[in-house]
Length: 287
Ligand SMILES: C[S@@+](CC[C@H](N)C(=O)[O-])C[C@H]1O[C@@H](n2cnc3c(N)ncnc32)[C@H](O)[C@@H]1O
Image 1 (tube, rainbow, N blue to C red):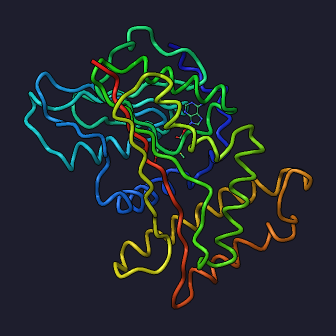
Image 2: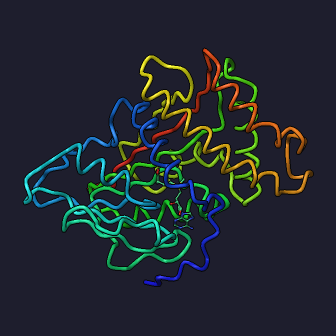
Image 3: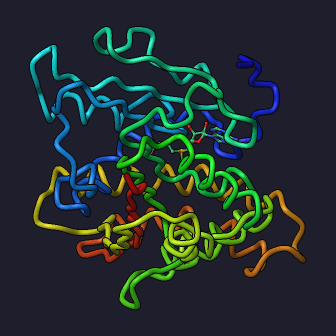
């Protein structure tokens, strides 16, 4: 497999990106009721499960799953994290049973991984392959890499905000949707994942919608985390959006330039409403 990351076109590759992802992880986990996997699986079966987290970044999801479900050494799952960006990988993987490997999702996967995983997981990376054909083809690759009986879980953002959310927050979603379209993908792909799973012959396919709160909430610690994640997202995406030609954008560029400071005020207010919806789609490869 190539270690070459020169084809990395990830638009949010900036110095704050891993921090943004860590904060966002906490908010999404909370939205999922504290669960990282909806797929109904005993993580500590014997022989140990093999779990692939594609587009893992620095393996935050993997580490959280490892530490929140401790097990005996014999029953510890084997984790493989892949990403296009090698520099994100942790210098010291947690335990001997975790490996990180460079893999561009648009390139062929290792042949020896076919039928090789009990769980394949991907979160917030459905836009990486591009159009619907390429995205469906990636999902087919994941299904191929599942062992018979293995589960796949895709977690992805939907194009939605609550009608009570603030104007800057709502406009940021418009910008995000534009950005994903401008890089050749679509926030609509997430709504097709369930159908793709079914076409690929997966069974027990289920789609759940969760709502993540990035605004005011009772848990003040998590509120601060959510707001910081929201502001880092604004700092990451808005300059990218502003670099696209006006004719590709829904909002006037003057508005795009205002959103960050307006969002700071919005989230700094006594009560602020800011929500995103994520879809969690799970399915099982027949035995
Ligand atoms: C929004 S982050 C999500 C990270 C992690 N899955 C999470 O939920 O926190 C998207 C990740 O996809 C990676 N990525 C972007 N394009 C990719 C590609 N073509 N192949 C593999 N990984 C890619 C980025 O480097 C980044 O780590």
